[in-house]
Image (cartoon, rainbow, N blue to C red; front, side, top):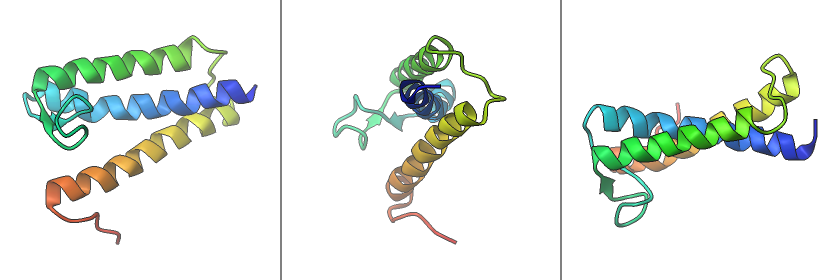
Length: 109
């Protein structure tokens, strides 16, 4: 597997993780920050914008995971790159949105 494939799987995991809060918030009819809000990433976007942004992220994840190389969940390298993308964007979201939603930084216990 090439470094290009690993990079694609990392960003595929990141895009998949990023799709989750946007799709869930949008389907629940709740506003949630998106890159299209003002200020970007801090202001609230409508539920419709979040469903569209979540779907775009889901589509990007599909393209990166299923159309580049031969992604295999049984291959430790593929899974590692994918899982690292999930973890990194998950931690970034927790740090960023923890501060926005609670009015303070994240709790580290």
